[in-house]
Image (tube, rainbow, N blue to C red):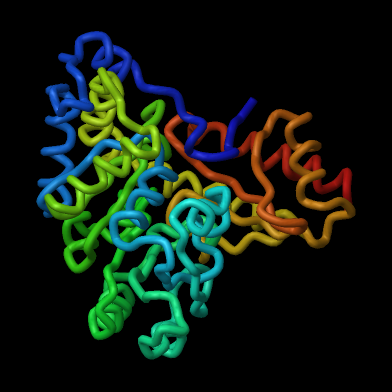
Length: 344
């Protein structure tokens, strides 16, 4: 099976398994795991922030950020295709107690004018405006990168209105790789950011939340409240340390493979693929010309040996990662050809 369902499908590298076996461990709830402490120190320095905290998942990192920046009755500004709104079981509202206020965006890239217009005067009739929420890269937008100048404009509006700014940077290293800009430069003007170890970086689990010392101290308390306190978490952190050294530098390969695969798929008549929209490691495929819905197409592709996901009834998503090799590109293209010929 060629697994292109997501970059969450990766298994740890041999170096990660070895690091897990030899990691020095302690009780992270007591801040006594030296491997976790080392990862957090390295990440904070890498991102140019005061502190970092290891979290079990990206969803918990996002939820903790909301709970630190505000409280029940707060308002968060975001565009309606953000991961935190679509794919995190409604925790933004049901657990954090936020009211979402939406602004317009183009494939995940926010519209500053729409954002400005969405901000109301402070009034007892309205929720308390607290957070501007950004996503980089943008999952539902197709792995697109939030350009620094656009982020700067959004942050400027947020500061004018006394809002905190959080970046859901689950795949921020893909953005950094695409732009050839250090992550510290990408997040220098925001208050907090979370990124996933378990997506393109091949770790078995884990995310890291980054911000000020006081932000991370409170996030640690929130993590405990949410049930995320971990003990000998150095086995997770050890993988993260390996990932920063070996997996971040190779993300460019995923981008190159995605583009080459997209260019091949675009040659198939009736298959809607635009290689110019492939910025990082995701390809979106329009299947509106097929006789079945996208989900049913994923089942047929799986029967032939390719595992991918559907975004909606007419869109498939392909995600490249470390375990997908360049020599498999032609095989995937041929399987798509066979499936398309079967359906059209």
